[in-house]
Length: 569
Image 1 (cartoon, rainbow, N blue to C red):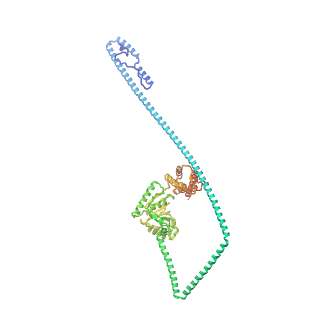
Image 2 (image 1 turned 90 degrees about the horizontal axis):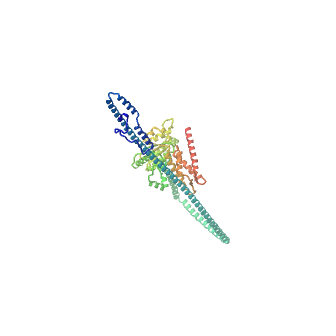
């Protein structure tokens, strides 16, 4: 009747399991599992109370047997429920073990990650230390090299001073010996002259007498010959008439030769001479060919140059200009028709420089004129325009006509803007450029292309904008000009020892490029030329870094002042 008194630990129907749970991770896990086991096998006193109450009821019940069976069934049901709870507790314990294992491995993974991170940080720190040591070693080596170079320069200077002193001593000694020799010779000569003075005077008298006699005899002979000839000429009228006719024919020949030479020279000048509108040209005149034949032969044998040689522009513009240069060269070789171009943009951005390079690259001659030269000619401007294009058509190599400041005379044809003479010159220009030519190529340059007459815009095949250089272009310009005007000057100057101060000139050129934002290529070139002038003017022949900074600040101030003047106008 043990089932009446609740759960029995020794009952064969109840599976008894140990309550000790341990994990290899943490100590607190074992404590939690032991508490769970104690709750599972805890003694229930209410079961005894229920059993006692049930026993009393059974003693006085008529259906004791049925009640006993019912109680037995209830007890079995309760035991089964209790076993299910035990299994649930055991399942929870296993889940807790799994979670603890998961937490353990997660913590272990974090620990490994942290150790890896620490090791990486240690490696980076060690690498930084190694780099610092290497930099310190480089600096120390550079310092040692500078000291060695300084000592070598001092040694060379001392040797040079000793050599100069030796040379000066030798020259002084040689001069003293030479003076002594000259003095001895002079004394000997003076002594000989004093001793032979009478003989010398007598020889001079004899020579003078002989010369006087010879001169008188020559005069008498010439006078007698001329007198006899004049007498025979006067006595013969045929000789007089022949002489007069010869003189007359000679005068007529000289007069006709003079005027024919003038006419021929004017014709040759009109056809081959440089027109008055052309300020600069690579085309040699006939007279210049005879004056400079070697220059003409070198030019005929010269090869095509790179169109962008010495020209620094943006990469996109350089690519387009390179295509134009190749197309122009192919046009000349295939006897095609040249295209007319317009270069517009700020002053000093390389328009004229590229036009010259384009002509030389294409094997053509170039001619540069300025639009402002047409207006002062007045009525003569029309004939000057026609003479210019007639001269261009006679070029066998092809001519690139570059018109700088073209907006000065190619403005819109209105009475309020241009005069009647300038309008006539514009009409003549439009007449000569109405069709494409295989003899000349027209390149216009302007800062204000919006002022062009519409007919001029119609004759332009392609327009290219030349902007102020960007940062990369300024860096290339500063390095190129610094090498050309400063470094090469220091290397090639033999009259005076010029050099740069001890600073990183490449880094300095980068700083200059950053600070010269907004400056044109011409302004940057002028700034480097001013540094060259400062180098020439320095007392010690050294271009220091502070001199560069001073010149740069002055250039930037002047640029700001120019911008102020432009805004005020």
